Image 1 (tube, helix red, strand yellow):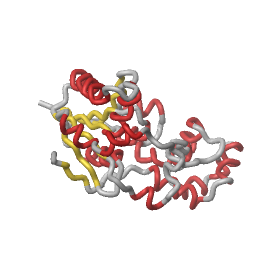
Image 2 (image 1 turned 135 degrees about the vertical axis):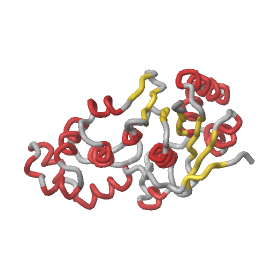
Image 3 (image 1 turned 60 degrees about the vertical axis):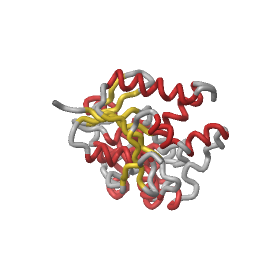
Image 4 (image 1 turned 90 degrees about the vertical axis):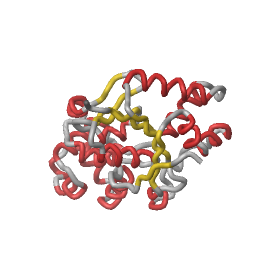
Length: 242
């Protein structure tokens, strides 16, 4: 019998629940969402990934996620005790020093001997998709797996971070390459699988793509790649209830 483990980002779940509940009854909203996921996916375990207080990306680049506004104090308090809440609701909690929840999820997904479903609306985690790892979107209640990945991107998943570096991410304050959106980024990554290859093959891209890439140095794109690459060997440990 094949078992399924469910992975989710605790902070993301709590924040979405907070705003859907408008700050009132957030715990009940989190409980209801977990009940929905358990009913839909029938997991053996629900594992909540917890952000570490500090992370290496912020240490590498102090501007990382620097454009995000302040959170309501009530939400901040909930996030500071996210492991307590998730334990209370029957989840296993995991964390890795100096890493974000996405790195914890990526590491656990990479290690998983059996089927894993990641609950997320975050396209960054598309990099984790493979034969036994899929993503369940609570927004549309659909599953995103290898077939959907191939249809959407058309390049190997180990190039996903390069795609993200080219596109950039406003939420994370990663600028990306001017005038390169999803379609052009996919074309570049299908043709060139590394920063070095991108610039070596520069004249092989369309004029607009060339113009955008000439506004970004290889070092700048490599820096963005470092920020967008999910860690699959993070020092993950289980957190126990206090």
